[in-house]
Image (cartoon, rainbow, N blue to C red; front, side, top):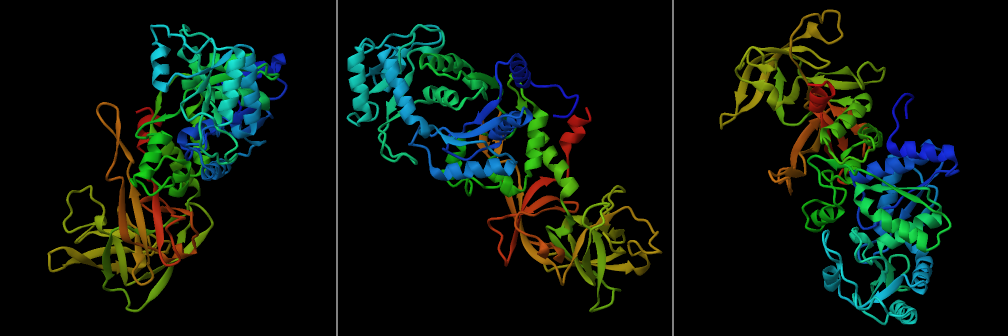
Length: 550
């Protein structure tokens, strides 16, 4: 944090705890469930938990809450680790909820022996009926008063696999009239006869998240258990578990507002549905709000960390404009992405007074004002952007090319359009121009001025590529719900680029001059053909409308 910046409420709590000696060392954790890929919402939690540990010289564990074998997979574990490392963070310990299954089982038996847990035979539907509502208390299960001996016997038989899924469940015995529904005899262990990605068939029962999570925090010595606001109502149960399981370390839970991003859906369940139904090519589809998706698209980890820093940490739930994220990405790329010329929708341009069979090498900057430069071939036959030409000038504010008009070709010469050549259907197929050889960029006699400057590529040396242009994957409806955007991707092929692009590697990012920022797709690009993903456009409406106060 920069000097003079205000601290968020969690930082204030930590500094107060350190000052008063409540804690000696800050220990946090990032606890994803390995049931899908991380998304941008997780980036906020990652930056917060790892960032707090870094800021106060503490530790942050990476803990996989793998207590539901029905949905979890080792491939998700690998993907999550890759995402965190890409963001620039490293963890102190890599741990798993499954590391503590024996410990959690012992804690559950201890609760039974204290008379604080019982085995219930109610079905899931009956439990919902007995639970009550926000305005009406629940009813106690008819199995609530089973003896300690009977509960221990049933619980051990649950572990031995004698019962089927849903047939028995272990519940904490708290208060069915509590105004907090989470305290109305919550489930502790349930029967799940499914192999686990780490423990195999060892267990036939698995702990519930609300039971496992506080025990994991306590066992690891976590001091500040930071989670999103939907867990605020779960905090009394969190504290109850820590207290009644006689945990030596007593962690404290603090909640912050999760990231809600406009035009974006961040639900692993919904995103998995898009993958399963083939709406997108996979979790790393460049349109997806997953970290693997935005990484493949070309977002930088520096931009995402900057974004998370800017939105801050608070309790109030609000929606962040996705354009702020795009602004952070654009700002980072503007400083670091080399410039190249690319023609997305090619139109042939011939300079009739340029020597035949001659090619000269012009010079272009890699970055504005930078010392690094590269050569760009120039000859009689070029391509320009089709949108940069009109036969007739529509108005006096049009400064691109038209018949009789003049423009400068970037890093090259001033040209004048003499005529347009049309195909059999009446469409413009070629523009024929003349050039003034005294107007070479950087030359002694290049003082002639024109208002329009166009990018171009040399026809003989241009590299053919495919470009994907993206719109938002989700469209918001009038009722606030989202639907997938059928026009979220447009593929342009062929796109023509200057030959300097041949030196690039998969994942490299560029500014296509006057077009936007693009990255070489690391999956679909081959030695024979480059595929580019649009990262963001050049236009920054957020900076103009919001950052400048308009």
